[in-house]
Amino acid sequence: MKKFQLFFAFLLVSFVFVSCGDDVDCTESVLEMESEPLYEAAFDASDDYIADPSDENCKSYKDALEELLDFIKDRKQCAEESGEIEDYNEAVSALEGEIDALSC
Image 1 (cartoon, rainbow, N blue to C red):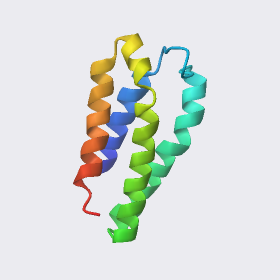
Image 2: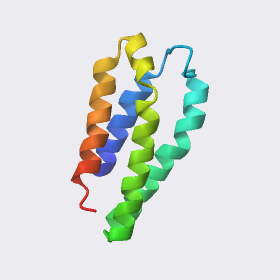
Image 3: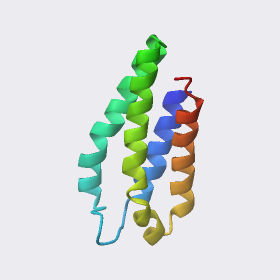
């Protein structure tokens, strides 16, 4: 379920980052390059936490999700300018919900 939620958030955010303003480079290639390591880290941490729900793995997973969330929040103007703010808000809410659900 966690992977599905994270994947869903990834898909929503991917659709949002099509156009953007001057402060943040929201071109598709730049976003993919910058976001890929964050998504991989979150997926890897999720796998580790599912395999071994220790406090250490929980904290690692939470940290990875928070880094991803910070990255996404820094690109809010992209969603606003492209008219995709509802999808953006859903993605942010999904990640915040996943973080809040963690018990560490």
